[in-house]
Image (cartoon, rainbow, N blue to C red; front, side):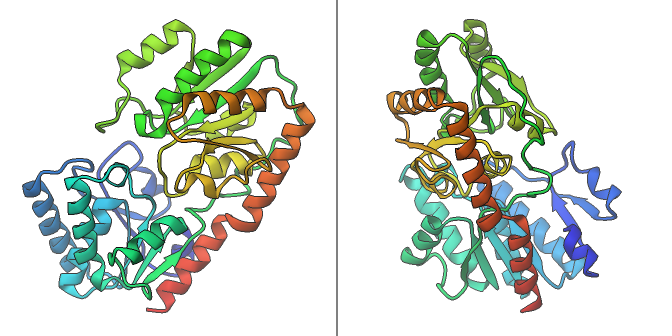
Amino acid sequence: MLHLQHLGYEVIAVAPLDDYSSRFFAHGIRFIAMPMDNKGTNPVKDTLLIVRLVRLFLILNPSCILSYTPKCNIYGALAAGLLNIPIINNVSGLGTAFITDNLVTKIVKWLYKISLRKSAKVFFQNNDDLTLFIDKGLVKAELADLLPGSGVDVHRFSPEAHFTARSGFVFLFVARMLKDKGVGELVAATRLLKAQYPHVECQLLGFLDAKNSSAVSSEEMQAWVEEGVVNYVGVSDSVVDYLRRADCVVLPSYREGVPRSLLEAASVAKPIITTDAVGCRDVVDDGVNGFLCEPRNVNDLKAKMEKMLLLSDQERSQMGRKGREKILKQFDEQIVIDRYVKAIEGL
């Protein structure tokens, strides 16, 4: 948004109102609150969302719409298509609907198919999702393009200037506290690991009690903390500080777009453990800048955590350097920004 503004475009942000909405004003970006039930499946509410979007687009008459998140991609594209306004979609991840194949999955696929027909461009953040959409006929191959995730600010997320020796060993998990992110498996694996290595600490950083069917409850988290298995550190706008203080970043998720937390971890030169799953595997070259484990496999996750723990400081540092090199080469956010500018100018 800031880069487009710098190029002379007028940028307007549309999203549900939350604690971050006021920050747009400081940058001179107009913000419009749009009520949205992000995880709901109520057809009446979703129809009203389409109506609100059509009304808003008629008023604003934008030259181009950039959409993110499933509902904005689907209903934003439907509204834009009705008004013949160019829209560029970003499918950052397919979420819980694509983890299991059921009726909801079939409905979501159908919605994507009818909504993306008039899109000017559909960006995907990993090749698995792009291939799936093309193979299933959900998007035309000529409209699809691949981005290196959402990119990462390599200047902000940089390694600490001087290594500071710390007591203990810290595994850090950065994500919303959802079971689909593998937090349950991580807690179980840490429980096994701490029985052998009591000095190990597992920190959990991210939103709790999210409005999601797979959300971890406050009661569950409190029980884990009281048991001494994990340390829940809440939420933070200074994630980089936690990343720099960690010895290894772990995300045993079932499926992702390309996890931003892992991109940021690699950018600050931290070794990573994640699943050999869609999106996650894009960030880790197994044995080079981290380890891959089997999704939903507590014993394999524990084995990879122990393997990381038993490496020397020099070996983990080398993994971190390799991760940083990978980010600079493949995932710098400037690559994403340049691709967006090219797509917009192409319209």
